[in-house]
Length: 283
Image 1 (cartoon, one colour):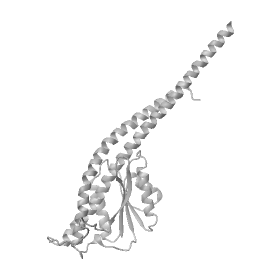
Image 2 (image 1 turned 180 degrees about the horizontal axis):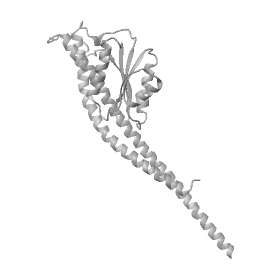
Image 3 (image 1 turned 45 degrees about the horizontal axis):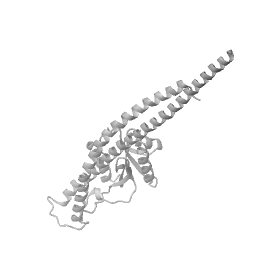
Image 4 (image 1 turned 135 degrees about the vertical axis):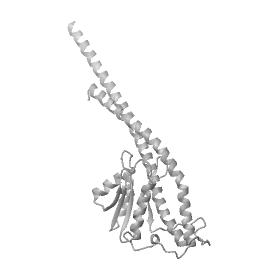
């Protein structure tokens, strides 16, 4: 059985850890609220961009654009969005697991890593890393989204990639983050609110130039939305993990305190028994 000194030392150590996890929970909660507000505010715009693209695509049949070109998949790029740091439960592991499942049946794959955890895993496993973005900060960066989108669009237009997917964690609520995969390229215009029916539009200056502006905007926004979703999910997962760690520390402190009290009572009982035994021997 551990001595009283060892038990006191362990209780003190766990209390120090509990203070750290409690502080990290509070910080993550503040960051999560801001990230949640950002992702919820951005979703209506993302839906509207998809709807506009669907309407314009239905009305501009015959328009050709490099980002719409469908080719036989020979080389596929995967953008994998993870966190730079851990201590967020299974957040990173779930995204990496999803990515591995999607990439395993594709013979020629290149990876674009956003986040240190995904980069480190792909590096250890020997994946072909085309680009890496680490140290991305605590909030989603529109400039980063545009840089990533421009990179894959240029590669796709040059026919170096035949498909591009992005894998990230979709924010559902504070307790649930769902790893998802979304096809970025070739762009597959969704159906608009009118069900994909052809609507007559007057294009000014013309449909080609409008699609030339709209398609890159759609890809950039899809990447930015993935970053927003991922950041909200990361902070939520870290807050939940730190809350669980704080509660586990409290349970450990209670168990150790009980053990310490028992050990102290046993020591007192032993001392009393020795005193009584000594007194009896003197009679």
